Length: 245
Length: 147
Image (cartoon, rainbow over all chains, first blue to last red; front, top):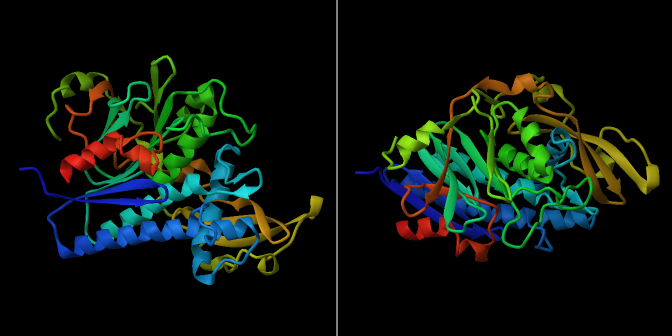
């Protein structure tokens, strides 16, 4: 008999979050799933660039941000500044003068939601936020979608246990939406997709976004980062990995 | 570990990840937050120091913010009342070595073309899908199979 799992699918932030907890169903876990769902909706309310009253829209227009949102806004500003520094400017929360921390907020929200589940006693947590995954416990098997062969996976990451995050960047459904903030243009020697694993999803997400901008140079840069593994599919279907032990 | 039909071949090309990881969950080697200037709201008037005024903007070396990964001191640039940039003056683990710990997880990356129907998967990672894109995603298929 497989261990029982609790699932929750949450539609928010313009995407879909899937929460999986491997545990005996208990009221405390269901309440934690409720709390995680509420948290994701709350993060959308505060950080959506599409809501005119969000903190992000307020920052964009120089309007005051409600006091109860300021601690979260301060943390996101700090994390964006830190990510900008650590990626040599390749991760940027400002585009053409407009504040948009979305590239960091989703992974950060997933991690916060996972903390709520873990605090409720869940050891084995798998949280997927729109294609970026944070794992605790395990074992878990996570497929990486093949960017050139829809409906199939190009690789599988098997995580035996512990915290592991898997973030994938690519042109996505609507063509390339990732531009190098330093040039304002998409990478010219772009990858079909790039997957980065690291212990934290905030970290993996930032690195995947930043490295995707680098095109072919991503491989060398990612290879220098301790604790980070990467898997890329090139437009011709060839693949490469970094972070082999 | 779960049994899996392609596991034997997969293991031959399994990639083992380096055993040091970014210790983002570790407490960085920095003084406790109490020793740092108190956090202030990100408004121009409440920063702890003001800087340049080039091209109509001004910078405020403001709050040291306690993030889950350690304290980050932020320099905010304002154009009027709009924040137009945030730079990290101090980051956790400025020395990359302070981020290293022994890995608690060693993921095995298996390069193989996997039919999602045949492989037991718990989740699927891919370029971010929209609410609409989710409907045709592998993750959606997984979710429906479990509903």
